[in-house]
Image (cartoon, rainbow over all chains, first blue to last red):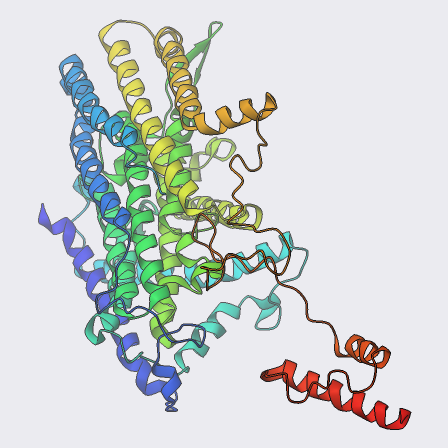
Length: 120
Length: 507
């Protein structure tokens, strides 16, 4: 029943209105004293070396972590319905899940062995 | 539910509220969250202060209780600065993206049983759905967008690093968090938060030497491993100490919100504390019996009806918040690689094995006619031993290099401190030992600049003057010969003029 989700939409509207109002009103409530130094990126007073928006690089490890996250998050998505319906599925469901988790566990062991979980 | 009390709401009770009841609940949740944030900040500052033997904020309001309100108002009247390099629309929207899901996550948390508000019977919960807990997880996942976009859009180095760290950290610990609550769904047979609370009403019937009694129903007692994994994972998920690496002040200034000021910064702060309150409330709901009264209180019949459960729930949330603050006051911050290793190599496999163990035990006890206790002895203990064995093997494998080096050191073959001493890195002292081809500061193996070790301290002007006095007059007048700049030039000229003055008096 979608009517149970209506209050969430209401709360979303209220929270979004509050947040947008805060963000929009901030420049007008506070003082405005122009200073060119305030517009620069915070770098302890020295010239910024690399600009993230214009060709800066970051380690590939973050990308790998995101990929691993997707693998395991999808595993979790499959685990939830099985957990809820576990009593109905019985032994068949358990065996299925052992096979499934075992498969993912093999991939996990491979990633571990190849150093995919090492951070440096 | 078999023994569902009339006050216990079920899924059918949701979605039938009158519109003004819905409105009251929406505003109520909003106000509760903002108040809890204001309370949590003061509470944290006071508790941490007590742990550090200070008194904490005590100026604004009675015993400083209005300090966070004053700080919030002050933030509104601060200048709103947007860096010139920032990506304007994303920079503008990131605090909103961060704050809104934080509010939404609280919408499925049950605060109490069915109560009457102005004559209308309604559950003390904004709403519930068959997939209730998924709403919380989805909202906490959406919050990552706000943080990573804020870090990227600031157009600055520290926020970018903080935002990336935060994203990697939150997705890593979200895996552990998601896995830790699978066992709860397994026991409760549902993902709806109100029914999970109902499932913790009565524990299993235990017989202990012929003594029949009702065991504890809280999932934190029935599923201790899940509870511990959840508790650790949400600390990483909410970026709290000792896992507050995205905001590691000593490395990243302020992390992803370094470039944010004024109310935009306040929104990030609000989102962080609301997330903390939400995961505490979820911990209370999933593991600590929700709004149900804890054991000694639950003997009283009226404890689980009316408005009393709201008090029990708030007390449980405050207790969970206290644990958060306790951790911050006690533990030092982890290194990032230690943190990621712990999440991926300890929490995730432990959670997976635990899920399988719990599922196996449940299935075996249902298929055979053994009681849960017997199954625990015959199945659980061997599985626990297997897990311990596997973990010890894994930790031995990961510590292999350290162990080998320690063994060699114990055999006296090499020094454990520096197995491969490299004269290039640390050249012996002396003015002419520095290699000729090296121009900049020496670099160690890790690439860190090392200050020049052969640096000789220039003699002080006073010593030089003493030398010059000993020398014959006019042997080496420094004025024309020394070419130097800066401070040392001033010192040397001062020294030389003093020398010449002394020579004049001598002469």
